[in-house]
Length: 302
Image 1 (cartoon, helix red, strand yellow):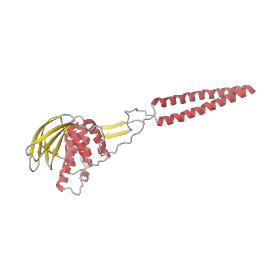
Image 2: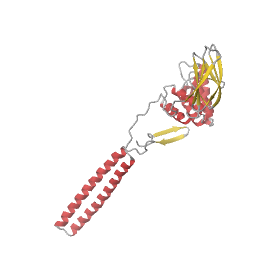
Image 3: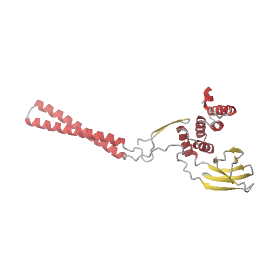
Image 4: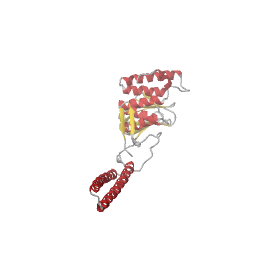
């Protein structure tokens, strides 16, 4: 993923300041260089900073892909929060689901509750007070400030726990922290994505294989009867007789009937196969995933 001369085109916004564009391009280039040397943590951080300076779907997508390889749960989940706050493209939605499924149970969150506009810091880093902040399990230093007051809290966050830190200007210097378990199903699809329509379960596989077996038996029987007809015809030519003629015609009729049944069984096997749930309840729709980690194919017939 070497930096390209067309990187400038990735950061075009009517309200973007020239300095923001320059810094976004620098962060993007640094992210690309870090990705090339397999420093995925740095790559994710720099791509994310580029997207913060000038929001861009491609930069956010690359940040999320790098975070998936970096195995940094807080970084990954903060990117998921950002992606889910936008309308998003399908690629970003797919990455959000993968990151949430992999890292959603490995981090906790700090939520900021302000009576008015406030600024927040977590472990000395300024963060968006309007969005919960995912952090690694452990102790964290939180600062909340408004124009009238400022509070400092030391909070301990456990896995899948939400710690809410509140600042109330009516009581300068005071704050409270409350704890709740994360109620969100960590493997659910992000709100911006369109859920796939639910489909009914298909027929069990044994029905399909039974129809295949019946087709094979009918085909084998029809073949044997056809050979019998050929043998009777040869005998009739050697010694023509009325009885031989009747026996030959009867054998020919039997062969035709069994061949017809074999055809019916074959058509039925095809229809049953198209409506069979070969994968069972754990199967998923056929999917081809292409990403930094490689190519993965998974799926089921129905």
